[in-house]
Length: 128
Image 1 (cartoon, rainbow, N blue to C red):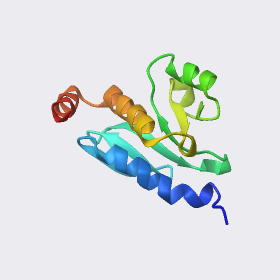
Image 2 (cartoon, helix red, strand yellow):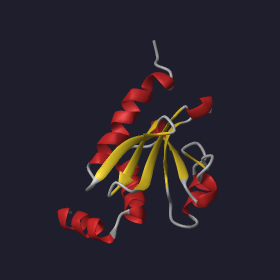
Image 3 (cartoon, rainbow, N blue to C red):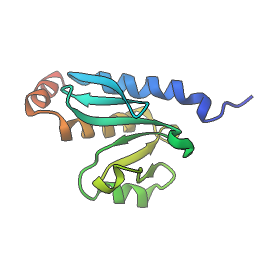
């Protein structure tokens, strides 16, 4: 029997957590009932969305540079969407069952770099 999207939520949480927690000084806390990831313990760079309010999305929300949200949603609306609450600020929702690990990790790293303090970014750059 095929698993529903909701049945895959724990697997997707582990996937997002693995990528986020590999970044320096990342802290995970629950926010609005969902795992949320903070750079340097202070600024949010990724929010898990596991069918939040039964909206059908099993996704991660990340901040994006100006113009990227619109471009991604236009280019691949089955993968990217404008999430509620943070969408007007340029954040993008990413459907987790429609994106590979490498591309997801690139989006998450870009989001982390947007909010992480400069000293953390230089530390991360030395790890590469």
